[in-house]
Amino acid sequence: MEDKWWKDSVVYQIYPQSFKDSNGDGVGDFKGIIEKIPYLSELGIDVIWLNPIFESPLVDNGYDISDYTSILPQYGSMDDFKDLLDVAHASGIRIILDLVVNHTSNLHEWFLESQKSKDNPYSDYYIWKDPKEDGSAPNNWGSTFGGPAWEYVESRKQYYLHCFAKEQPDLNWENPALRQEIYNMIESWFEIGIDGFRMDVISLISKRQDYPDAPDDLAYTKSYYVGASNGPRVHEFLHEMNEQVLSKYNVMTVGETPNTNSEQALLYTNPERNELDMVFHFDHMHLDYGKYGKFSDIRYKMSDLRQVLSEWQEKLAKGWNSLYWSNHDQPRAVTRFGDEGKYRLESAKMLGTLFHMMKGTPYIFQGEELGMKNVPFESIDSYQDIETKYFYEEMKNQGESEDYIKRAIYLKSRDNARTPMPWNNQIGSGFSTGKPWIDYSPDNKYINVQENLSDDNSVFYHYQNLIKIRKNYPIVVHGDYKLINKDDSNVYSYIRELNDEILYVICNFSGEKINFQLEENVNAEVADLLLSNYQDSPLLFSGKLELRPYEALIYYKK
Ligand code: NOJ
Image (tube, rainbow, N blue to C red; front, top):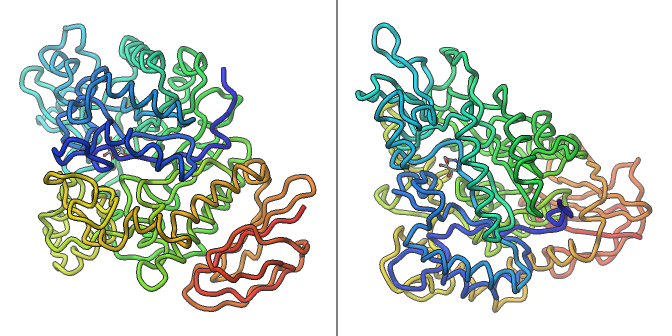
């Protein structure tokens, strides 16, 4: 049962603890989100994705769930959540939640029971293995947040697997009773009326049952990928979930799929296979990775970005793409892919243009529509994130200079995305009257909602226009994607085609003036300007342009 409404939707991601605090405790909440629904309606989005809102000891900011059926009190009550759902629905906005079922918190009742003995009803809900003869861990896998992926428990004299923190034990999807519990839980949320799920690290749920060692030369952290990503039964499990529960509701699903290439992604998203609607891949996120994974100061190359994104556009023609620059795990897009300095506004709009005109469902992470940049925290103590803290220590232990470490953290820490949403330039940024759970960005004084709304040329209004174009021109949703001018080293341009309509999208990724000339084999029709990020861009396009720094243009011809 579905009508694929998610194909012409734009999703807005809310990080609940940092969106809007209504009661002065320094943490965002449901009432705060309700207050801001009119703001989201003005932007024009269709769907809100909320990061986890469930009971949690917050070791990994809610990705360690201790009860899937109750709400974390700091966000409000179940009734407050239902109010939010009603208010959003009344404004034509749907809500999807975060489904975190690769692991739970170690304080989840299932785990508390499971760890007691080898023969209780929950003993096989998690992945337990005997030690090797010498007492060491079953294999050499390293976890995401540092150290081994196995933790020993005396009461069972066994190790349990945790791909993330040791407080996040992995669930055993081989166990049909566990799977049934999860499907029932999903169903109970659909009955409450939510409109879908983003599925956390869903490509990791099926583990190779031989639990092979990772090759020695693989980076220690995340070496569990060898036996945990896109494992032998992952498609079987998702198909089963689809059959038993997803297919019965008019909902959307987006799987977060680390370590998944476009061919594997097609297996998840091909509608004929009845698994998921779309996935988040990481190929464009990996373009600036270095020795410590994301914590590097390497700058991506536009030509690599273009190659990766085009590949996904082409390979997923039969499936569906999710289009994202940033989220709660990534730094701010304008710092990473644009220019956070002189051309912050132009490049933020250019990046929005590139993705919003592509085929797929665009995701806007809160604050991206304001052109927010990374956070210049003075002190390392301002960072709260478990991943940042681990890599800070790791880089220090490896002898990296303070300077390098600070730069890598400034460029890549997840906290860049997690500071409170700046609603205005007052004390508290219009976010809270209390002490915020994480420091404000000092940039809030000039990058905020109030300032964006009062300026016709703001990033906010550019995003609003991009969404309007998606709503008014079916070619944006349905047209075929074709990369053009493949060899241009500064300009990423592509066309969309639908019957006899054509849409040209031309984005200058450089801070220089560039002469652009459409390559010969592309039809140079006289096309009309739909949107640009400069006020006086040429109204007609017939193949030639002089582009200004970060200029982004959309032309349309019927
Ligand atoms: C991906 C989530 O987006 C991230 O925030 C979290 O730390 C891990 N999965 C573990 O759940």
